[in-house]
Image 1 (cartoon, rainbow over the protein chains, first blue to last red):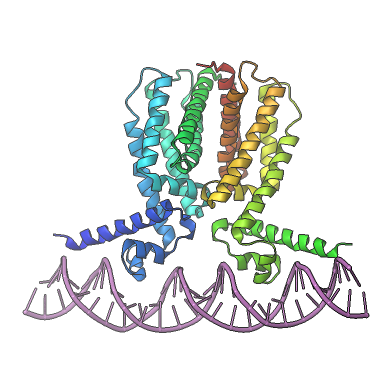
Image 2 (cartoon, rainbow over the protein chains, first blue to last red):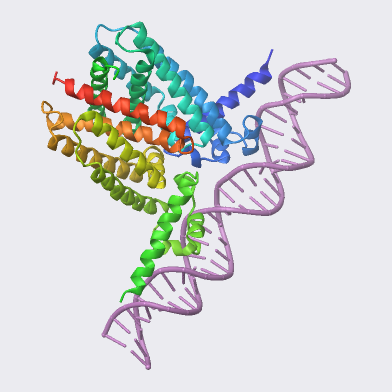
Length: 205
Length: 205
DNA sequence: CAACTTAGTGTCCACCCGTACACCGAATAT
DNA sequence: ATATTCGGTGTACGGGTGGACACTAAGTTG
């Protein structure tokens, strides 16, 4: 039927993967060129334009990839646990596994959130906001903090997301140093517990 | 006496300021070129090499600038307050003012922490670590959390620094939107209070 | 004052960049 | 079966880049 569209979709994802791989290999997304991406994808530079206007547009598509990745992360963390401590442990383990299996996307995310073009920054910010909203949903459903309004839950969720995202930069860098990485994961766990403790104590003042 | 060294130091700081200004104007530090910096500084490109080997080396010097900036920030936040809430409010106000008066440095910091070359990333990480240690010092001196060991205080301080640094990206972007920026500052304040509440509740488990 | 040092200049080169353009050949539509 | 669409190719151009090199002029030193 559609050999045409199939092939196009194929090289399109080849371009996306090429960009991600270049980023993962240590390149800053802001500095990688159309020519590099095309070469990595095994096509000629000018063919790039059949798919994206420029690297920025490709970047926005990377954010879409990130979006589904984050959704997977939320979903796989959704087996409810007995208590907060356990929930945190399991969620962080899950987070770490996602960081490993989607390194390139998270490297792109951390880079782009502060160093991307404005459209990319906003797109990533938006994804992280959606992510926080999903956490709010979960916290509400599990009635983790019955005394908090949903606005207050959102504030807590934003803090959790902020803490996770910040740690991602460190964890991705500690990739090849398991000892330090585990230390960092332990730190992250303690910090999340602090947040949960604080949230439980929060009185609207 | 030393007109020579004076002039050199002068153009050197002209180069540093040129780089910072280019970053502040929206450029990603990773993408700005020696020629751009030199032009902005009002010298010829090749003269750049009299001061720095490459942009990376200049970047490491920007981290030094950041270092003294962070030290100023700590110092000016060191008037002790009556209670936690007030301390947080004043410290955040101080933080915001520093963000405004040293925009370029903080843009560079947020960019570089996740998107810089490995040496720059490490240098910034190191500065933030020192910053956290200074906070530990202050918290210990004020006996804010008598039940916590210094290792636990460090964990809390890291969380505070993480939260501040993460918010910096947002705050710098909201530069020209006072309403949203104030919302973000309020969010930050709530999050810091959560952290302080959680820290007060922490039992070594 | 003479010799030396050095910050900044001017020129030049090989390289990579984005992108315009004409082209091809196979998948699709008629 | 023929015409059309379109993803990928190859060539070409102007412009920006890092950096080598020889130079100058002013500051320093002895």
